[in-house]
Length: 175
Ligand SMILES: [Zn+2]
Image 1 (tube, rainbow, N blue to C red):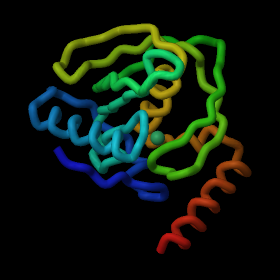
Image 2 (image 1 turned 120 degrees about the vertical axis):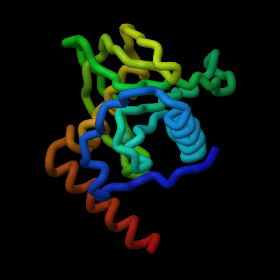
Image 3 (image 1 turned 45 degrees about the horizontal axis):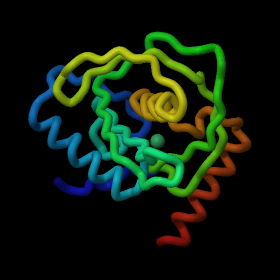
Image 4 (image 1 turned 90 degrees about the horizontal axis):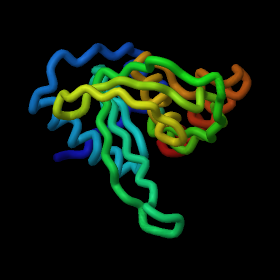
């Protein structure tokens, strides 16, 4: 396994539309393993393949939530290949989102609170489930990446420009 470099805004590849996976191969599973390692190291709770430069419809998610309130985080790795949203609730939920491709930037984004989703797992098995809470938020955020959409695209232009300016400043300081 190896750590992969994570693309950051304004890398134009982040705006590419990812293509469907035709077959779940060992090569793909090796990429998925690297994506998990990269995501845990970042650290993050979700990563789309396009964020490591591979514009294919593959997501990895692990909320790493503790079993009980004060407990240690527990790893529950989830793989979503060719994910689709079949239906979504009218009810919305707001969460202060961040993204590994926009380091240290956060903003409140409103999304459907519940979704019914369909996807393939790392063995190519089909799943169809109702998701809510943090997993629903995370899946919708990661699925946006497959369409070249970033969470800042859900914000007003003013807020988006503010974040992009801050990011540019941060990069200049780091250089
Ligand atoms: Zn993201």
